[in-house]
Image 1 (spheres, rainbow, N blue to C red):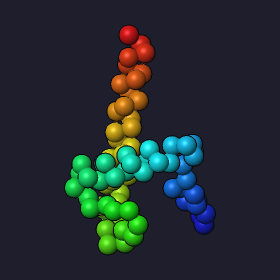
Image 2: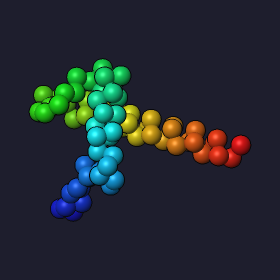
Image 3: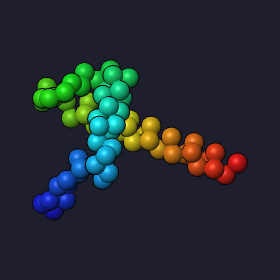
Length: 72
């Protein structure tokens, strides 16, 4: 299974990198995770996972809203 996660932090649309980084820090702040630019090795894997999971949740909610508006 080596390499199965390689590139998992890659942004598929390079132009979106800055927006995704901003979104990550906004989500971390919103849920109380002290994420900072640079080294974050002092955070637990649970804290990091919570940020990523919450980002996905918010992106799905936004897409669902867009899809619902298209159907109306």
